[in-house]
Length: 426
Image (cartoon, rainbow, N blue to C red; front, side, top):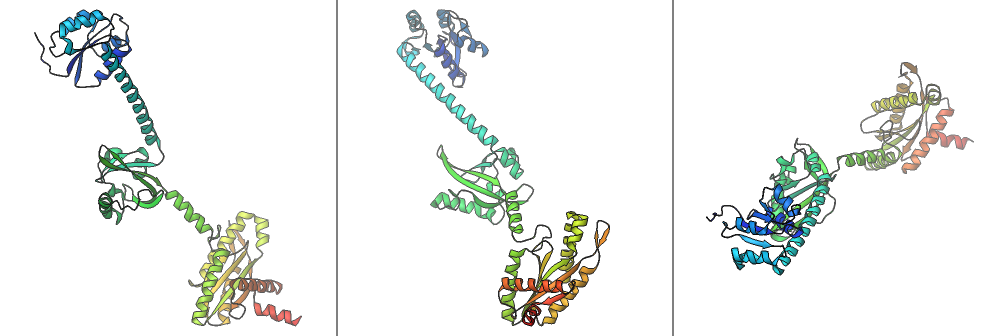
């Protein structure tokens, strides 16, 4: 009685060596083929062992296998036994149109072997690529031509806070802040229609992105395109550069600000002074530079240590900032040296008032870890435009005036003109 075919095209394999085993492996992966039996005189042939693992009937005698498969009217026989008598029996039972034997089977076996090798190499490459993508430290996201996410590696999960399951199928624009979110679909459609692009082929383009919790952050992005099966896909490799940007900002800050007191340093001071001179010229006013050196700082630093000295410098900085106007600037330019730039003063007396105020404020005791310490301040003053219109010269001349103040008894101030008069007196 013939058996109706309900699943897979019936196949019988005669010969379970390397060729038969390779053929069986291929057919096992094909849902359109059903291997009804395999035969070989060697019970340990690789094809026999493989068939037993999958519950496929095995035979030691080819003739018995042929008889067992007679009930499958459309069964195809693959004879890899190199036995002419088997081929003759197969032809007798099934007819020559349903038996593949001899050179055609050898050719088929070679094709199967080659395909198996190619498939193995392809699977190996795919596994290697999958491993690289899975373990990459950079986020890797693939989208289709509709902007829908098709792949989302673990690094991308960590960066954005979405799981792979959440991200797959989601539109990429959800990972963007406005106005990029609204414009993404427009840019994508324009590229698909015209080929005009802003980001394809641009390596390391800096853009802003949005995490699942709504936090915006900077990232570096490179995008490439591939066509697969007639469909276009876009692959984005991205890196969260939040820490790098923070470090760059810190480095840029340190280039212009003192690391201990966070006051402007000498480089920034000269920029500020240039601006003050320009402002004074425009308003036909004066500007003043007050060069301040602490009296008694070295003794405290040597006696109580550098930590106490640093604490004192921070305390001096805080008092100086409270003493001057918001429009004025105080900078730290050396160990215990500070400079104050006074914008747009109407008269020399304004500089004198600030100098006296600073001397008074700094004369009050500083609490350094429970110990009261006292310092003084010697201040030199230079004026724009009388003493110079050059920032560097104004600083130098205020410095000279400060040394004259120290020589005059400390905790006092002197103008640069006092230095000039002293020289003339000599």
